[in-house]
Amino acid sequence: MKSAVIYVTYDGAINSTCGVGVLSQYFVKSMPQVSATLHKDLKVDIDFHVIAINLNKDAHGYSGAIKETTSGIVKSLGGALHYIENGTEGTENYGDKNNWDLASKNATNLIASISKNYYKVYTYLIDTPFLNVPKYMPSSINNVINLLVPHSDVYSHFPENIPRDRLDWESEAFKTVNKYSNTYLASTSLFLNKIINQHHSINERKIIELQTGLLLSDSRFELSNIDEIRNRLVSKGIPIHKPIIFSVGRAVPYKGFEDLIDSFSLLCDDGVDAHLVFIASPFRNSPSNINSLKKKIEYYGISDRCTPIYDLDMELPKFIYQWPNTRVVAQLSHHEPFGLVPEEVRLWSRKDGPLVVASNLDGFVEQIDNGKDGFLVSPSDHLEVKNLFEVIIKMPEEEYAEIKHQGYRRCIENYDYGKTISESLQTLVRLK
Image 1: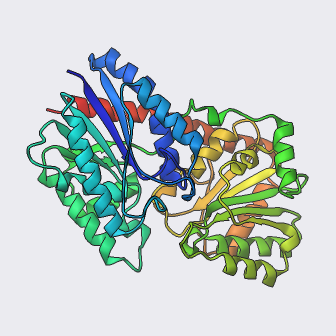
Image 2: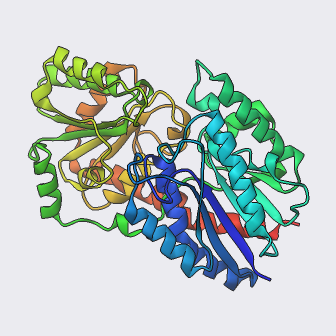
Image 3: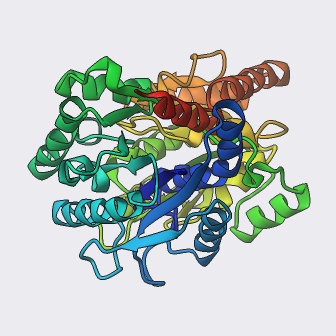
């Protein structure tokens, strides 16, 4: 009798709104090779199923192309793309604790039903909405192994004003790792693993390595034609002949866009003729700091030196990362459990493109060796950030190229997500 992998996610199966969605797409795309490797190494055959929040076509980030890709892969591997409700009538993929509770319960019922057809079932439960599936799973279901896969937690995401409902939800979930023999916790980054263990004391034997990374073989990392890149930047009104400083993230204060603008204004005061481009995308029906960013740009009088984009644009970054005059990609978040941008920059800019400047905290620290393969900086020290921008813009090309090469090598060696997924599944299969 066959075994099965069930991947349960709120983002990335039929939509994409954040880094979790990108990782989910990597996971799905990696499964044909992961399945073949599992058969070759351990003589285990698996079917692959995906469970996703049922979203309507007007939902934030919905993509028919992503849905079609997911559906095609699961069908080729003997499984199916399944849908569950989370109480939002298809309008929201994430929601609040009530939505998470319903999503976890509905996912549990579906997993229980699917599991009847298999010898063993390995479930990857992605992030907050599905962390309490183990709590709701009937004790009579004894062929399911659960892996909780958090990409943030309440302490790393809200270091100051901790929301009680999320704290309670996560506390209940992480207790199940130690409580149930069939439940394990994925370590997606060193920083997040440390934070979770500080507050929940997870048995180290219940932790499975699933380091966040990139699907290195994914077609999205194929290099673009230089004319296509130029045309895309020009279409956005970006002056391609100037050194470009770029940033991307959610339009919320903790992403550090205010610090970025403050630092860039100092660079302008120094007479450095660079151009700032940033994508600050709001989540639908969620508060944003877009008005604050607009006021800062107006206050400093740098509207002609800046191209702000206040929309979800998943394609523009890859073109900016490959442009020879893009010198810096700055990620000045005040807290970030890991963040994919530094590794995406390193992979896309392997021929031409920028160096990474990131905040000297949280998950960025484990990705960057300051001065050797990128740079770490205090986001609130605007003079320090400005000075670093200026150094990189004026850096000799030989030194610049060496730092970029070291970053690329680090990405290839440490953040191969396809390999990590395969190793995590083999670990689960070998469990007694």
